[in-house]
Length: 187
Image (cartoon, rainbow, N blue to C red; front, side, top):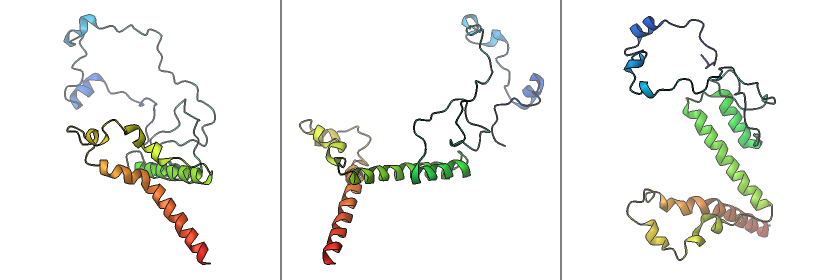
């Protein structure tokens, strides 16, 4: 059953809950509460449980299967677009948030978006500078080898992968360009 913010039709009585759930209601008596003398219950006298008005424009927004509707207020700054947006929409429409598939599809959508950003950067004629993005130039003169191999660092197991992850897409793109140039020259 999908989650709903509506209250249940029947609320069990305190005695029913005490029978069904061990320890339920142990703090109902104010004398049993550790902070009772200092406890303040009237801090927000005008608080209400009314749901705020629904923000318009949520027809094309992603919504979890667990919820009947979108939250009253939601972000619209980054609408879904392209292949990555289609992957994310599919994850929200088809799989519950409790399924690993849902989250793996969202990660895949992020990776597709990152690859698309790299391709747009290359196509723009002003590609990103992978050397500056890696932060290597900022480490010069600050003991780069010693700081990366210092005892107590938790990322030493995977630090060898960092250059591959950062430069891998660029090397693949350069290899593809070289392959296409050699192929074009042969023709």
